[in-house]
Image (cartoon, rainbow, N blue to C red):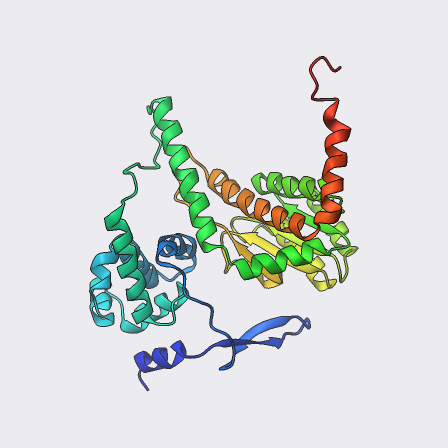
Length: 329
């Protein structure tokens, strides 16, 4: 059997679940598993930006080609796209599947739809690169455009099924621990403060040792959230692993859905991987996308716990009101 034929058969397989050594569910092939709906055409570019770092170089060439010229690639057969990118037909099929499409034909349809959208209204021609001598007005415009793109990419790529499951777990948790280092630590603090304001018990230890000792105390019915853009931050992965092994429900908020942190996560929420420049370190774009995910979690939890959340919010507002009145000391 040729590699291409194997890929075609692989296209038709689903995934199911089985129990791993820890007793937690892990993915295994299954013909009965549900196949998720392919992403909308507008989400294609966001998917490419998010998943490109985890692809092989040959798959990256295919992904970059379809995102860069959707109209041209939509007119190509699988053989034609393989020839254009210097790859194989099997690589093209694998790339289509990784981007969320059952097969290459579905990807071509999405490319045609994306090309039509771009033809009717193209995005403004603004580069996100900020030069040393850029006027401050240009800096504002470029950052604002890139922040908007980061938010749009994150929203387009966010798995709402995983998000809903994470919301349900957090809303019913006895206690929640949130782990993050550096800029992700600030996001962890933001989530914790939001949960506290609606009457939930939450902690965001800034000390890595304290994070691990806190995680040891978790059990079934508790939740641990790891926030790491790279997906490989050891000081975040270690407490999440401990929480996972203790039976807590675990959630990873990361820009790398294939990163090491996800092997200890029951639910994975993927953030955008934006292009960075010398003057714009990764912590800026990652923080923006992480904060959007945190806000989505918070609103979802507040909806589920509204009868208790609303009075808790009112009480916190009243407790702080005197500090915001003019003339207060």
